[in-house]
Length: 412
Image (cartoon, rainbow, N blue to C red; front, side, top):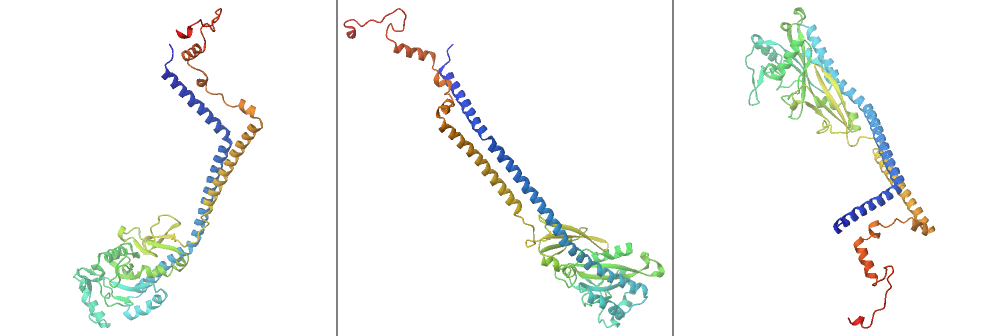
């Protein structure tokens, strides 16, 4: 059965597509070396830039660690030295049964001059309700006019302290402050809990960040309570005499240790991970300095009394860095070189082929691809019709001679 014209056209299209694909493959094969060179160059460029990037990163981290090491040491020292002062005050009260207000002032004055970051040094006795009036009268006899145990009222003003089993008044304070002297720490939940922990564990404990009575809202302070016991009764809860207390503003104490970080544009933050989330930030050298989204960052710990704080140091925009453009430059140079080399090889092959065609045109013609078979072959029926049209009657048939037309043949 003879193929239909539609089937013949479809087969021709399929053979034409195959021929074009073969020619394209031949072109790709001609440039295979160039493609290989380009791929190898891209791989080498990416690998080299990655290596340079990692090397620079390691060098930056090593340099940053060396720069922040003295900052961390200074910060730890700035917070640890005041604890020694507090311990000496506790030793004073344990060694002496009675310490007067004047003796306390003379004892702590040199420490306050050496450590200006300390806001106040205090003596907080444990006073039963039955002895409250005796303590208040003794303080007024020392020259504190109108002294009494006080607490903060709901409206924020100071009022006489309510009656309770035990009072923790700020009895001695250097430097003194009229709003603070007499404040009953037992009336404040945060200070009371801190004092209770010191009483239970028998050692110095630090509070969460506090808001002092005379501090602006954005200033954070820490109070450290060191228990003082009656040696004759041992170190039990019932032998407690009171607390040596130290209060300092975190910023004032930290900024004295961070002069080097400011010079090198290293941002410093101090956190209290044990505190509630909204009260964890103790200090930030710059706003949002603790948001470590990336870059050079180092975290260190600071043990203060019974709490473990976290120090975060982060490189600022002006911190000196390694040559950050080396990896990018190596990548661009490698990719450009690989592309130029691949294009050069392809151009050289094309030029060589054209030269061969010019030098030997016949050979190039012989090498010219043959036309598709569907263009050379015709449909059998169409070919027979063409032959029939070209033959005169009797031509092409063996044994038959053509005769001239008879008279009048053209008038039939």
